[in-house]
Image (tube, rainbow, N blue to C red; front, top):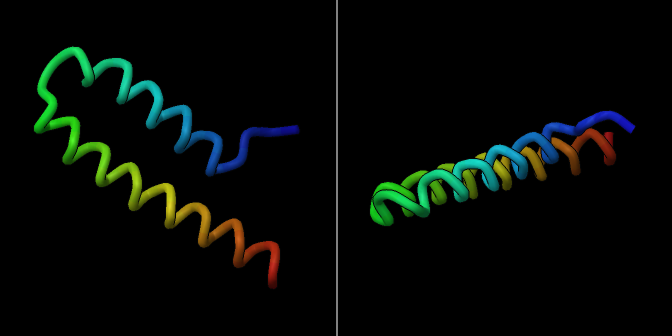
Amino acid sequence: MGITPLDSVLIFYLLLYHFTVQYDTVKFRQIALICRLLTSYCLTLNFLSVVI
């Protein structure tokens, strides 16, 4: 099984969490918001590719 776009987003999110949680929480909230948007975007793409 290869890595799906969703997997890469989750891995990216975990790495970001790991590195940013030690520094600035306000900056992390912004990054987390962007990651959530990316994740929902990838979920939508995955859903559409299954449906179509």
